[in-house]
Length: 229
Image (cartoon, helix red, strand yellow):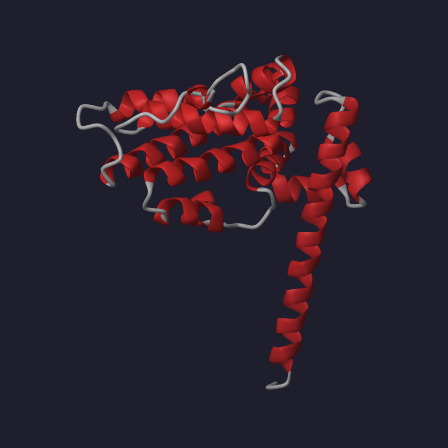
């Protein structure tokens, strides 16, 4: 009897590894089919075939197509499918422990840029899918608002905001400035490079959120401050 415990543990570990591989394969197939065929043509059966698993496995793992798409959104947002909250990830923790508010916002802008590079194409695709994915996008935006509100609260608690600042108003402003819609308008729509977007965002957030303002972003030179001209 004593010798059975390691075998059960080994088998359990193998099942977990297999489940992780299947989950990763499903999310990869889902992403490929969404961008190739569009949302409506991407069925659970097609994803299952592409991932080399049964449709039953997909339903058991994700509950159906909306759950699968939400899982893909979460993995795209985080950059991986590890069960680690965004607030506990190394880049977020570095931002929060940085004392200089100007450096903090520079790091935050880089963090936002990375997220939007990953999520903006998927966001644009899903917005074209109509009400079928409305709940997925609405949930994602609510979660994003929760995240930016927590960051503004952090700035307020560390004394970075002006004494008369309205944290709720600033949270709304930050939510709008860091959204995928504006990122897409400036990069895909207006031809900004992602580096230019990050520099603009750093300058704009500094001027909007902090007690003082940094040099203004100069559109004529895409990234240098106007005060440097």
